[in-house]
Length: 205
Image (cartoon, rainbow, N blue to C red; front, side, top):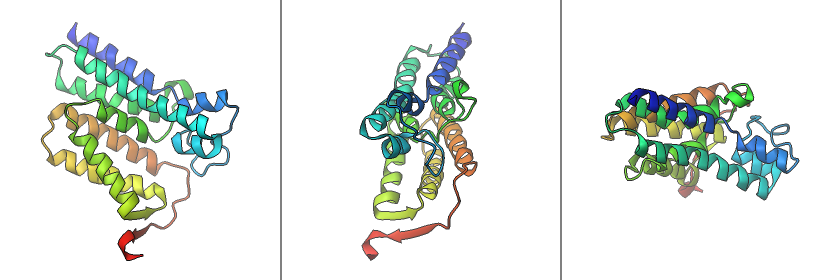
């Protein structure tokens, strides 16, 4: 019963992640947010850039809530005896759903906003969330890596290393490891042109 309930929670979390709010928002606002984009991803950045403020805000809100709500509540509804690896799969499920959405022929986004939401849902254990946020801010504000494609890759690699050497428990560690690997594979498989990476330090300009 414990395992069955956990599997049901994981499936629901995955299905929540499979709802691409970029597609939903684009349809509601009658916008094409992927046709002219570099990466063809129905994510928050393209929603704001090609769909406008309303489209982008709805996309961001949806991508955050679909990761935050199921993980936050399901982790608390799970039986304390639930195996740790099932908790890990639950943590990763919304992001996997976003990257490989069953509702959109397994062609999804990069999962960045949903990843932040999932990690925030792990409160009061906010270490991984803080690490990811700090690394992302440093690489976009103080150390500028361009194009953004490389910023995300470096951010997840560094965060994964820090989480692996941290003490966050096996469920959180495995859960984020699955997320990081999925995001990195998604990035390397992206159709966008892989331009040469440039690194600039803001204090040198």
